[in-house]
Every structure is written in C-alpha cells, then in structure tokens.
Length: 233
Image (cartoon, rainbow, N blue to C red; front, side, top):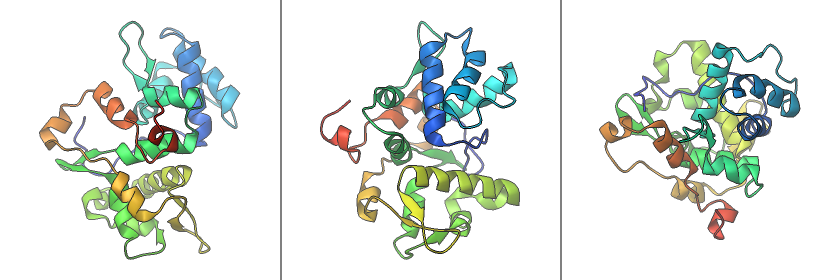
C-alpha cells in the first residue's frame, strides 16, 4: 500500500454511502469485467439519488469510481474474473449486516501508512473524545500524525469531511446541538477504542500489502458488530 504524505481518502462523488455500496455490489453481481464500466452507471441509476448524472462509463470515469470502491474494501482482484466482492460486501449484499455496520467494520479495521508510520485514523479521532464531549472539523486538522497541514485548505477540509461523514454513517458520531460539532452516538467510547484493530507489523510490511491483502484487513469481522459477535460470517 502506498506511503501517503498525509491522511488520505479518495474524493470521487458525494452520495449516500448506503446507496453507493448498493450500486457497487449490484454492479459486480450483474456485470462481468467487460461490461461493468458502463453497467455501473445503470447501478447508479437504480440505487443512487440523482442517478449516474454525467457518468457514461468511460475508462477515466470508471477508474475513479473503481478506486473508491477498492478503498472502501468492496472489490478484490478475482482469479477468474476481474472483480470479486469482498466478504464484507457479500455480507452487506446478503443483509447479514446493514450499511452502518459495513462502514463501522471498515473504520475499526482501517490503517493507513502516513509519512512512513502506520496510523489508525479512527483511533486518533476517538482520543479527542477523552477530553472533549464534542469536536469539530478543526480538531481533525490538528491531529499531528494526520499531517494535514501540508494539504491545501480546500483539500484539508475535504479529507476531514470524508472522515467525519463516514463516522456519521457508521453511527460512531452524531451531530450535536451546536452546528458543525459532533458527539458520540451509538457506541461507548472505550468499547470503540478497544475494538480498533491495529497493524501489528512494520511500516515496511504494510507497504508490501497487495490490494487483496488490504481488502482482507478491512473485511475481517469485528466483534463490535452484533452478527459477527454472535458467530455470523
């Protein structure tokens, strides 16, 4: 996995996560590797508010959409076809987990290589709640290991918004009474912290991860999710 200069998330399209994940899983289930670039547009029409808009399935458009799907752990490189669904995406497709649990599992397992150091983004944000009942976007900017001060103001804001929105969709945080501030939502702080899964090898080993290794890391069942705790997939 690439060594990033700072905290990084793919910026492709603003859409409800639940709708996007349904579009990705439906496209992989319905279309083979020769058809999926265009077929993904049909899946966007079926599941995403506003549909495919200007997406017509060009190589560049599909590359951008596919990169986000890979980052979210939806796709693996298959042996007999170009794209296979991850075990996490299959669990979502088969309704073993709901979209908020998919994203919760993703965030609890997500590690990134930033400035040659393996960082757990969710864990770093959760530490802010040890001394604060609410946080805003500025708190994210100031997390030293995220190294966001090297980003442009616009890009820094985009990255922080993506992380906060994914935490919102995972029901880790919710909007507070003060506009622009967030508080914890469904899960107790210590339970969340204890459920974070950390990379236990070296940064060099992390950099050697293949995409399929990364997806396996994201997809590993986290026991904070009820169906996995009770012995599900």
